Image (tube, rainbow over all chains, first blue to last red):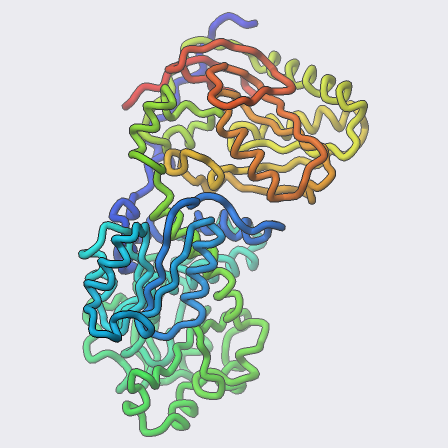
Length: 361
Length: 189
């Protein structure tokens, strides 16, 4: 044994060692603005671990055992609902699936009474989709549980934006031949993204713009005048264009939105066919894209309207990969919001360990 | 434990203040070499052996141990790393670190897994690791190698190979790396 010769004292105050921003201390994910660039990066980073979990023979971890997650959907959904439920189950949480259409709301119970009733059963998180903007924020005021906005009217759909950012990051990593975990926020700086289509009625567009611009990407909106929101004040976009052909050669990502006919998008247009002629990503237009440019769509796709069949099935189209990543990203969000110490605050358990941070095991 | 992991663990920002160097870098190498010999002796070779380091402190030790085993027996020894963040019973205390990657090199069914960690303390990390390993297949056997056993077990866990048995106080901190073993304290900043 050598005589005591203490190594140099630990470095202090280095940026890289700063504690992570605790956006999840607020316990809710209602808007992308809750996160900020650092919060988005944290979600993407934790998602990496869950992408690895998905690749295992048994793609399930016990992290949220004993927690209950309710999916409360007042609007139709396939992928978001199944994605959240899969995510919660892969974290070993219990999932209650709740559809307002088949609930006592039909008997005249108010949303508040319904939500408080469900909360009284002992629920740790609500995943809320509603046709009214602000519905998730309202639910967050009523209950103690964590609330995740899974789409509220024309307002926001934060987990969609997060999974889109994750998918872009994954592709950037593959292109550069780097590990996904090496690709950080800085790699989004200067990335040119066109969001095309029904901006006015799209919560995906709003969350996408907020997330991508927070990471430093340059976002251009492309839409007919009638489908651009009346005011773009506060939208951090680089520009608005009405000419898709002119924009396509200069973008790294072409993000197509669904024409939301159920929200009356059709009445803002002379005809769906004219929309397709001017703003649909047809095979000809896909040819205008720069080599390696990505095509994304949040789904569900209206094939033949905003995206042509042959384009949707091109290798550069990331639609299915977006769905696959959705599960990992939602696992990350649930884990960050609910992955607190079971049965007490962190300080208590730290005390139990004698000297909590003691690192070993 | 890696410095970054400790800093991100509540109470956040604690600083490790070293007090006494217990093992020098050469001592750590010697201990690993001895452990390698013990592994080969106990298992009569290295058939189906996989070395898996626990994130983050066990990983460099695992890679070094596998290297020694390969040189000793002239056979390839797969090395993996495992992050048990999602299997802990104290979830939320420890951060999920970007660099704490899980990478298991092969199906573990029927393999002899040598689990490597820096410090054995309460036994909770090892408990979590055993659960995690089960999700990768039914290993033929799992053996535990640690550089330091500091006592204070809270679960019935016993190491198979130990670099150094080191009685400690609960409030002390042990820092292990290939550069040696240091005993000290964590002081809030």
